[in-house]
Amino acid sequence: MSILLDRHSKIVVQGITGRSGLFHTQQCREYGSNIVAGVTPGRGGIHIEGIPVFNTVIEAVKYTEANVAMIFVPPPGAADAILEATDAGLDLAVCITEGIPVRDMVPVKKMVTASTMKLIGPNCPGVITPGQCKVGIMPGHIHIPGKIGVVSRSGTLTYEAVKQLTDLGLGQSTCVGIGGDPIIGLNFIDVLKLFNDDPETEGVFMIGEIGGGAEEAAAHWIRENMKKPVAAFIAGVTAPPGKRMGHAGAIITGGKGKAADKIRTLSECGVTVSKSPTKMGEAMLEAMKGAN
Image 1 (cartoon, rainbow, N blue to C red):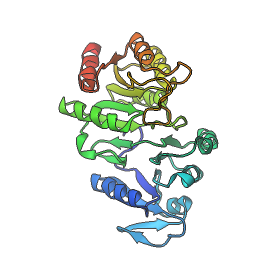
Image 2: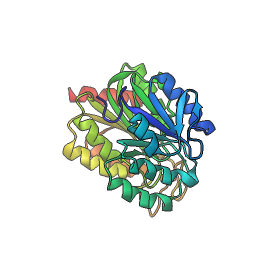
Image 3: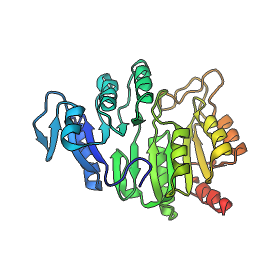
Image 4: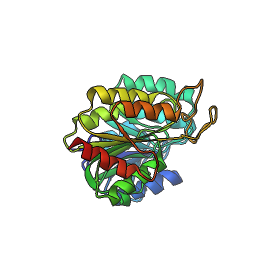
């Protein structure tokens, strides 16, 4: 059993009739994910690529027993889509949508936290359990099943890290892109806790970036609680203060959130930090060898 997804997960796609939603739904289904329903208000009753479409998530859950949502709803309606998944009692929602206003996510975060549903994202590549199920936009072919958990704020760097791990024979248990927005669902510590308790995970690779203090908080949690080796890479070493780097949350403000500070804290807390994005796989190997 994966920490978030396995081959038995039943997935409903919110925004399935959009171009992006349909394309990635097809990709996920080809990978082996069990797509049981789609949701687009006003389009209920149709089938698209053989998938039944419903007007609401609650209706989709009633008829298909879906327990996971993949959300491709455009930014103006994406926050409401997350809340709809929450109200339907799903176990997990993965919101791929980029550009949701922060003010929309503030009440969503409160509602999700008070529920039993786990939220990944928004503005994330999603989650994959290699060889079993993917819910997101990551290229499935670069992943192989194994014992390394991956958690990241960056989508493209996740793919690079996974490719390096795969080339070194280090398969992955689960890869989680938590997203780069200021307000997200599960954070680094939340996912690290899941990996720490997962018997299928023997080590973790973590990818952070400038902005905020999530990486430092994770470093202190790792030092006090983590039973497994952790390696990491922090993007944005050369980013100037006040300049946003890609993600909405990747910005140095008030002198805080610098890459150098994050790297130093992680190193002090026993994390093996890669100095280059081309050496991420090697850093994981080093961390694993150091733990044996």
